Length: 149
Image: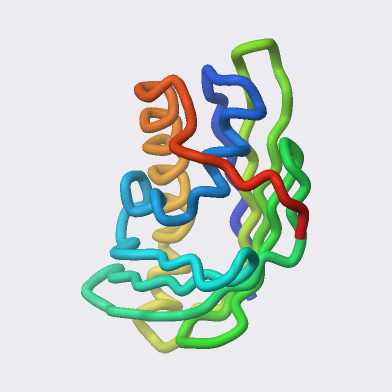
């Protein structure tokens, strides 16, 4: 298993950042390589991705969700093996820190080489930067799910 930890500061309240992160169907707007995410149930999502010319599909289950605090997940079916957590930290009234930790299992020669070259870390850094731009440009979330998993 490989591990990546990254964070970004966003100029929105914790509640806004957390609410937006629960809108999985908006992820293609800021996550490079994510083609589509379908919300199957309140706690299960189906992902369609294309990274480095490789198409993958998988299901992920939200294992923990605390509004304005954290969202944790693990894959449960498909071609990708990963687990992660994103946490939200209050810095000021209109400033938050979003921290992402991801454990993943690269498959095959190409993914292992990409892992060693830091491809996933750069991908996550870029995705968090695009999340920052997405949420700050909007100034508000596209929706929310305030339930707990």
